[in-house]
Length: 288
Image (tube, rainbow, N blue to C red; front, top):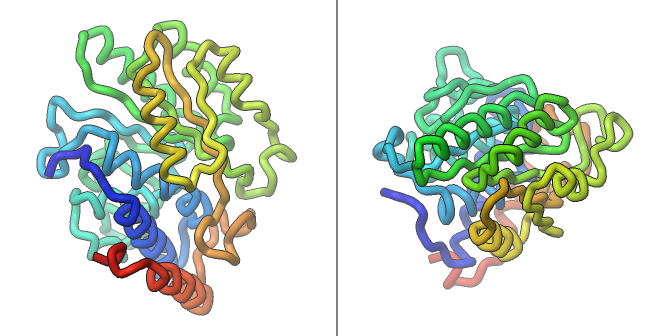
C-alpha cells in the first residue's frame, strides 16, 4: 500500500490509541526504553506516516519516496510502532523490542527494521544528515521531500545549529523539520539544563519559514501547519509543536522521570485501563 492516504478524524484517534498501547507494552516487555518522548510524538507520527509522507512499505527503497530522518532517535518505541502499523513489518514483533537478536534495538540502525532511513544515537547528528539528503536531492533536481523529527533536547547540540544554518544557506525548501517541544529531558526541565527558548525566534533568525503549533496533540492543528508549510518556498520549514511528555498516560504526563523508565506491570495495567476507557468512549461510528 502506498501512502499518503486520507484518514477520518476517528481513524486518527484510534491509530494514536493503538500506538500508545504499543509504546507502553513494548517498554514494559523490555524492562527499559523511552516512553515519555515517544508518547509526545504520537499524533505527529500518525499524521506524517499516514497522510503526508510519500512512501510504500511494500517497496521501501522506492525511488520516488520521501525521506524521514529521526533526530530524536531514542523514541524507538514510537518509531517502531508507526513503522509496524503502516505495514513495514509484522506488529507481533514489537514485543521483541530490545531483545538480543531483534532488529528492534534501543537505538535504530539503518534498514533494521526495514523503513529506517538512518541510524541514530547521539543527539544533534541526524539533522545534519537530513540537510545533506535534502541538498543532494535538490542538487539532482529530484522532487522527493525530506522530513525530520527533532526535539528541544536535540537542539541543545551545536551541530544541529550548523545544519540549520546550512539548510537556510542552500535554500532547502524540500526539508521540513518538526520539533517535538515537550519541555522536559532526562534530567528535568530543558530550560534549567540548557535553555533553547525562544525556538521560534531562533529559527526565524536563521532564515527558516517558522510555524508554531500550540497543541501538538491536536490533529487539525498539525495538519493545518503541514498544509501551510507545503505552500512555502525558497527556505527550509520548521513546525514547532508544543507537546506534553508522556501524553495520554496520566501518571506519565509532564514527569521527567518517565523519559527513560519502563512501566512495571502495575503501571502498565494502569496505562491500559486508561487507554481502554478512551477507546470505549468512542462512538460506534468511530469504532468501525
